[in-house]
Image (tube, rainbow over all chains, first blue to last red):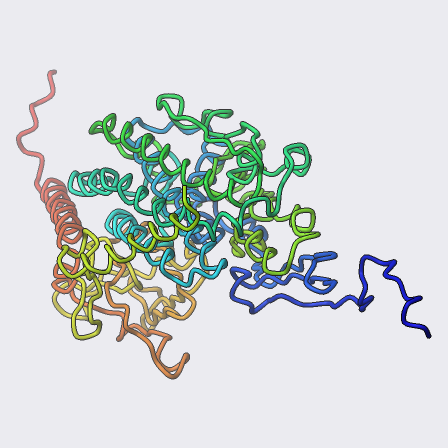
Length: 385
Length: 192
């Protein structure tokens, strides 16, 4: 064949076959036992098929065979990074079902705990995102230094660092002492300074900007149609936060703003989390100012603590939802008047946010798939349940 | 802004952290590593690891009455209780066997909350690693029993509250018994 007659017609001059790569389930960048079945054309992603279920533990079925109170420690194991937020959602659902009131102080304690968990989650997610980018362990260890202080508080208050099991129907398990509140105040006071330092390290870093900007863009209409919630949705510019929309617990008393992204790329998802932490600090400051001595659990519900089998909510159904750090975490309960829930379902934000993974990844390089996955912020314990 | 200034600024943050970590206090960003197991962080009082059974004075005088509530309410079902019986087969208010599978226990503290006799509590012992899951981690009654003094030692506030509650209940019981035993002499005569 004459060399001159060969012209490049195809945009893919090599015309190679596509390559199928299995990411995971033991790959460190998949944040647990999650598998991505990626089809590659050279370095470019053609399709992504998520494979889930490696950590399935039959959570819902187990709960349907237990008393309402005994499900609480199992909810810790859903999203093991923020067990307090999981407890919150479940407690709200059961309180709705059985119409239990929550005293003032308990509401404040709950909000303080939920916002502290948000700090824990967002700060470590950003750390892990940077780890995925290749900034090996410097940001994540700065993040863990702060996280450790908050986990110490959790240990002092609830007895366990991560599996807190702290919320009860109608209040919380134990009261928070003044010394602990003082410690929380100290952490909250110092947190903005840490965020400034963290931002000086990261936000304007050219490498971070080049890797994250315009990567994995999630358009707002797709985000709404795929029922994405949490920081991922807000990074796309949709103003939707359960704390503002549903106004559960006592969130209507605090003034805070909802940070919104502009483009919906990985960088926006990173920056929305930073801004959300600043708003959480504001809520914490107000809550710490507003907390007054009082009952930490409703006197009527203390009897259920001793005899969980006597706790029989009336026949009916309830859906309790909270703005967990990952998105809308909902618990759907159906009671048939027995001590066990007849139906128990968890709407886990990790699973539903992951459904757009293919739309975000196609057309990008393999290395970008990892940071896109990191920016969605999944926890496999909640994803597979 | 000049390209690369963000990176340089970030480098200054790491340099500052590296240098000041030698001077700052541990909770303010200094060196906070504790050389476990030579040195330990004191445990928080509410810290919970695994359940144990409390006895008063001697191990024979245990508080557990084998009511089986903890075994029924335990979420992962890791407690097994067998009630003791006398020669005629009548059940006694004490366990013949009380077994907790520590490898199944998930440290939730549910047993402690539901126990009506203040018998089972969460321990501070967490170094239970062993080679054999069945021989070492399935705790029987002899391994589970610990004295009230030990409980007072690890969790003074909780133990004192429990002791106070138990003392008051005992006094109430004694008073009631004395009242019942006393003949009703000083009852006013009925009007005729």
